[in-house]
Each structure stands twice: as C-alpha cells, then as structure tokens.
Image: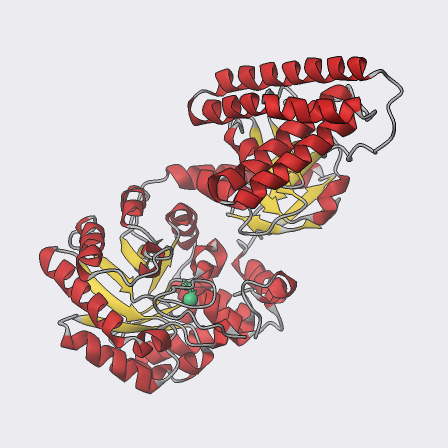
Length: 554
Ligand code: PEP
Ligand code: MG
C-alpha cells in the first residue's frame, strides 16, 4: 500500500480501476521526409478526414453545447488556410507529422496573440493538431479513455474540451498530476461533486487497470489497497450516500444542541440550491463576487436589486451579508487599484472601504433598502477587521443606516485576541478561517509553495477560534464560522466544541456536516476539540481528533 498525496477537492471517497488519459505525443522532429511530397500530402488529407469525422461523430453522441464545440473543432481541422500552410512545408521536404505540427503551431500563436474569444481557441487548435499527429503515427487519439467500465481517470490535467464530454456515470473519481485547487479539473469536480485529488505528482506512475482508493477528504490516493482498506472506503462512500439522502433536519448535535447550518453564497442565484440542500439561512454572502469584473463602483439601485433577490429567498431566516471585501485574491479596481508588494497585508477589506467611505455608505443604503422590502433577518458584517476602533467605526456607521444587527469578521489574529472587547461592541462575529489561517501561519493562501501551512487544523488557529468564541460567550453574542473549515465534517465538530454557535459552508457540504454533528454530544465535541488543541501541528491535531472521535469498541 502506498499513499500519493495531492489536494483533495470535496469530501468524497471512491475506488476503482485506473484509466489513464493518453499523454500528449512528443513534438515531431524536423527531419527530412523520405516520402514524396504527394505521398505526404495524401497522408495528411487522410488523417485530417479521419479526425474531422471522429470529432463529428463524438459531437453527435454528446449533443448540446459539446456538439457545437466539437463541430467547430472539426471545421478547424479542415480549414483550407491550414491545409495550404501544411502543403507549403511538405513541398519543402518536411514530413507530414512535422508539417502539421509546425503549421498548426504558427496558426495557434496567431490566434493566441489575438486574445479574447479567438485567443481561447488556441487550446482547441492544439488538441486538433495532437489528434492529426497521433493519427499519422498510428496511435490512439489523446483524450478521455473509454475502457468500457467505470474507472478512475488519471490525467496531467483536464482541458475544458475533455471535461465537456466527461461521462459522469463512468468516471468514479479524478486524479491529476498537475493543477491545484483552482485548476479546471478542480472547478469541474466541485461543480459536479466528483471525488477528486489534484496536483498528485506521483500519480504519473499509476498504470491502467490497477485499483486505487481516491480519498478527497484526506487528499490521498492509495495504491495496492488491502481488502480492509477497500471495505472501509466503501463504508465511507455508502455513509456519504446515506447522508446525502437523509432528511434535511436543522443542524444539531446528538444531544439536540442546535448548530444552525448556513450557506456561503456569492450570487443570489445560488439561493435555490442552498435552500434545497437544507441551508437554514446564509452565513456569508460575499458581495464582492457580484462586482469582480466591474471597473466602476456598482450603483445603489443595482445593489438593492441583488440584495433584495437574495433576501427574498430566505423569508424569516437569517442572512449575513458581508460588506465588499476587496484586495489580494479579490481585487476590485474601484476600491483599490494601487500596486502593493504584499496585497494580503495591504489596503484591503474594511481598510479599503474606509478609504472610499462613499462606496461603503452606498452599500449600506442598498442593504437597508433591501431589508425594508423583504422579510429576511438581515445581519451585516465588515471584512478583515483588525482593531477595536475599526469595530466601533463599522458598527456605528451600519446602525446609522438602520442596520439592526452589525458585526465583524474575525480573520486577523489581533481580532481573535481582542474578541472579548470587540464583541462588547459588535452584535456578532463570524470567523473567516481561510484568512485567519493565512495570517496566523504567515503563509499567503494563494501561494502553492506554502500551501501546506494553509491548514485550519493547526492548533494555533484552533486556539484563536476558542478565544473568539469565549469573547462571544462573555458578551452573550453569537460567534459563527464561515471559512472552509466549517465544511470539514470532523473539524465542524471541533469548532462546535470550541464554542462556535453556527457553521456556514458551501451548500454541497451541508449533508456531510449535518450527518457528522449528529454523531456527537456537546461533551464529545468538547473532548474532541481539546484533543486537537493539545497537538503540536495540523496533522497531529487531525489525528488526535480522529482518535478521540472514534467510536469506543469494547
Ligand atoms: C475567510 O477568509 O475564511 C472567508 C470566509 O473569507 P474569504 O474566503 O472570502 O476571504
Ligand atoms: Mg477572508
């Protein structure tokens, strides 16, 4: 048994035989052809015809958008300009393989230089060239394999065109050697809830047909698993399936302690799915996601429309909206377009809003208008609050606009340490564990080289969460969690044990967390949390919690 490490996407686990995506063939060498130009051209025409036909057939099979994409690719391969470019090279004595490679590459560069929509077609042209060259070499076309049974797809990374045709009934899991949590594969896996581990470099040595376990929750691919490991993985997969179809009860521990489960949303359109998955409200609405591509500040009217749409989806329910959080990973040109060497430590979050106070005032106006027009229970919070004074500033301003419940995000260690004082002023706090981890461990959350530090299981982060929750308790104010940590079923139990009063997460994580909470009493949660707190590092905290959480078998 060997474990290959990568970044897990989602929480699932799956097992099955590997089918590898054919690696792109190496570029043909520029050697002189031993055939006549006419023979080489005939080979090219036949290969092009085969590829165009095959793309057309696959398109017909796929239908819809995928058919359009593939038909466009088929037209590309038969483009007369390309044919004459290939002929020029063949007539100069080049092999068919090299002529195709070189002609397509020069056309590709022209397309890429145009940028925009046409620029994006460069990758499609690469795919087509690969197919023609593979045909000339008598090799199978690159792309998603079809071994005739369900399989674990192992690839370098998946191109959008590959994903368009992915048969989700056959693909049990995805494993890539390249790519990170924001790669196309990861996005697809999240969207379609496919079990995936990305960036597992050692997966390059996996062979077709070998059985592996893909554990997204741990970010591990296990090769040569034992029967026992296969059984355990199956048990977890079954438990997940059962959780997904369990009744949508309100979040609670086994002893009935209520832990409302809320949704993280970036667009009002996501509300319906969240409600369908049992979200009891919204714990984080990231308003900046509405305006990431805007160069101008949004108008009050535009904002009122969006916020009203969101609030209307949650009558009588709590909806926590975060004021615009600009900076670092979420640049908003109209709030801060200055170059900063360390944007994560720069004019971001509430600092940027204060520097453009009119924009903050407009947002509060729009929120108050949407609140007045709907029945949801609106809470508004400020991002990246790092001082008591900033808390006073935001809460006072929000109340000036009639916002009834105004709070702060605790994402910076200074706020966690001063939580008792901050929560005298704020109506509530919501802990953003993504940034809190980044700032506690001093590791840029966007930087791959320090990604191993970005682990909210780190006991230093857990201590800060405990401290914040204690600050809330001392003032009888709620302290929720809205970072990714809340979506980890076992960490969710730890967070409750540390004193968190609500958990907010991507709606697709709700079922797993709901099922996990129901397994433990409050005393258990506290005991598991204390085991994690006592560890030295993130890995041992996770292991200690797992051990403390394991059912006692006599
Ligand atoms: C966080 O930092 O944990 C958080 C919820 O905010 P964001 O991920 O949007 O920075
Ligand atoms: Mg944050």
